[in-house]
Length: 126
Image 1 (tube, helix red, strand yellow):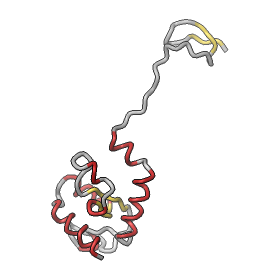
Image 2 (tube, rainbow, N blue to C red):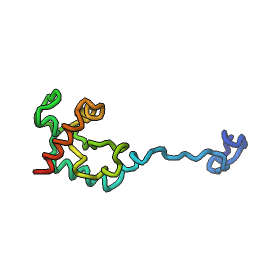
Image 3 (tube, rainbow, N blue to C red):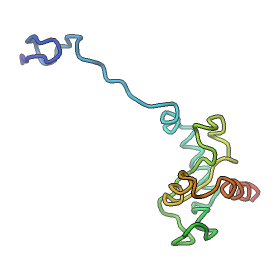
Image 4 (cartoon, rainbow, N blue to C red):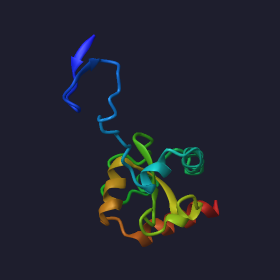
């Protein structure tokens, strides 16, 4: 089927590549690419297993906990962010399982880093 090409302004077959169409490139930074690696998928599951699939903030009744034994919407949080400490991205002593709500609070800084690191140290000791 012949069509008018909006890139070269000529008429050619719809399956013909005139070479003028811009190539789409995946946008993403190192942090985004890391989150799709098999190493991260495996480590994330390992941390959730270490933390018994429970939010470690909720289980300690800290920061406006609604449900003490929360196992819903769990995420693995980097205590020291990927931007600040990319080399610690897979270290057990930098990762903690928390619920989505507490993850947002931790990201905003409403849950102090010291509290998170103390909980991680406690979990690693078990």
